[in-house]
Image (cartoon, helix red, strand yellow):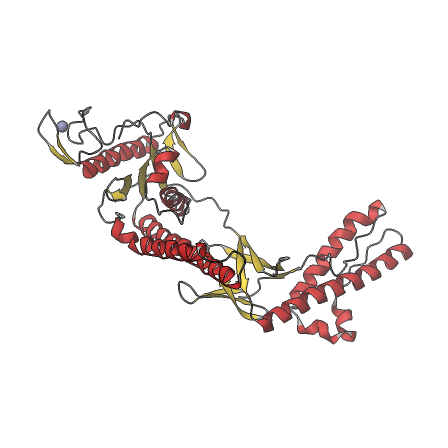
Length: 402
Ligand SMILES: [Zn+2]
């Protein structure tokens, strides 16, 4: 997982020093290994950078783990190349990849969450470095190592490697609390519990940010291309976009966390992509579709707890079916928010009826799953569905449920 970091000038200098020290260790150890290999045909030297530190005290100023990792990388390269009669390359200063790797030992690396917008990562020797956390790190992931790098344009990134608990989590067979999410036209997303609806009010902050972006964009269009003001304004807009997507992700993460902790299973419709991008559309400043993101977040958060996301076939008539008597109302139009079933006169709120149908169908699927129905399939991502779902290829066919 890669994150942008914004080191201070002082921290940058120390990072550059570390790059230099790694290069120094690589070069000197390589020299030693080459001459040792020549003298003792085929034997490999495996010294640590410790002896280099004695004569070169500047090496002690930087993260010692970065030097150990350089040594390990060099050993691997020697092992591979020496038997072929080749030697690893000396690292030229300009060509050198500007990065170093350090390891997680006893909380020497730690993510410090301060606020929505301000977070830090604690690193050996560097201390707290500002980090842009564009996504959350799942619970139970243990940090292994971190690589700090600088791009050609002078941006700094850190890529974190984790040990993920690979112990398989047993999927449960009993699902007592079930929630459903359904796409709804005037509001955005409705839930059968009624507690997790997403209304336009819930994402008003997002619309406001969008309006600001549009305003700043108009200002930009009046500026002379390439002028100092232009770049400043462009930068400002970029920051607003970042803010918008960070807040959206945060919102969806919190909702999916709450739902996956509270419920044992969540039922959704297997929508086609076109419909999915219309549901929970966050607007122009976030081109990716919010509903798809929410479903992905739900599926992995549920999966981590042995819970499932149930996908109901898109041709299941969730809107047109009367949830009381299962009669299909073929005359139901998209604009009908309320309707009355002709068979027994049951009055329906469109969204509530649709959610009830999805919930019943989802529970039915869960029961079939529990009794070992082989026409169902549980994907490794924790999505439970019929083996034969109607394929996406028919996405231009009008959905029965609509
Ligand atoms: Zn009915």
